[in-house]
Length: 78
Image 1 (cartoon, rainbow, N blue to C red):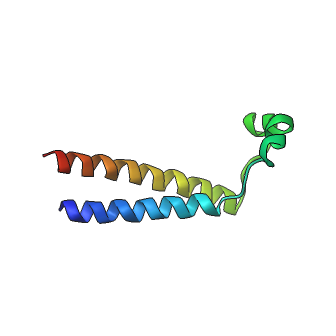
Image 2: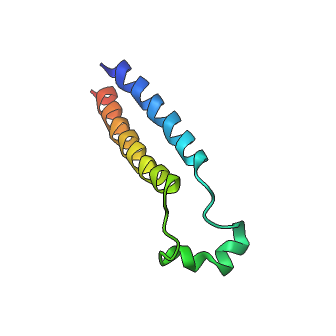
């Protein structure tokens, strides 16, 4: 049982890494943070299409990763 959850944790970790790397950058580095970072902070730029899908997929995979990590930690402890 613990081995299956460890394999699932590795799959979630690789999935999370790949989904985050597929997303576009939200600003143009430090200059974007100084000049145009407030636009992203207050929601003037809304994600649409593929960006919205990747954002929601990232949230789902991250939740799965953390839940699986907690389960693996509990199984290892007992």
